[in-house]
Image 1 (spheres, rainbow, N blue to C red):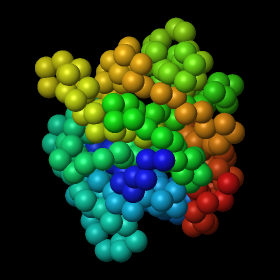
Image 2 (cartoon, rainbow, N blue to C red):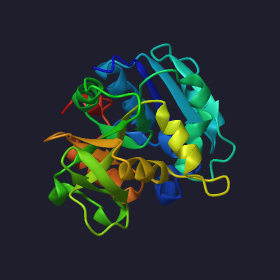
Image 3 (tube, rainbow, N blue to C red):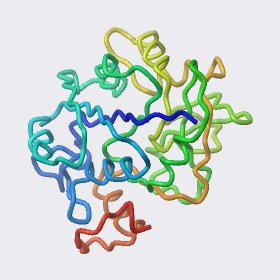
Image 4 (cartoon, rainbow, N blue to C red):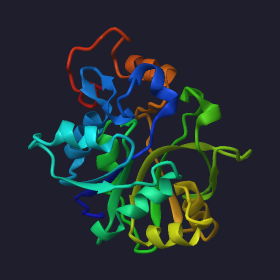
Length: 251
């Protein structure tokens, strides 16, 4: 068991695909069942056992920090990424100085069930590897074209990316990481840019990226009006339903 109590949440992007419903709000503050999407992520991770959060913000980060400024429920350290227009690997590297052991890596726009994160946190992890939570239920993926796909060999992921042709599961955006990931991201940089998939691909080639199947658990990446509406139905709420219940606890 990793025994980690720390999570990094990437919340720096400008969320252009969701702009028609978000207006001028950054995507993490878009409403879902009466709460910002990011609040659902925090609540789910906290229920899974996470106690400390490092949240990387960029686009309209001032609004995100202001929203949670007086919320005593969460122990948050804010990390600024002025290069938020670059790929998400750059955002994660900004949090490097805060990490000294295994950590849960989450996306601010991925809804999930607390038990999924709790199960991932119980996985034994070596100092030189990363474990990615994957979904084998290919028929249940709402937007396969936009999904990050993974190809496995046994417990190991041997390829990852949106365009790979051979795949048997989908990246859920939830990782149990050892700090070695930062070195792989740095090594995968092209110029001053890198994505998580770039670093993960290099790790996969060396059998340092393992897969954790989430089974029947539900999750959804919310990055467009269509996926937002789909998530509302998936987690037991029609598009017009904003009753303030905790979406991650109701399924």
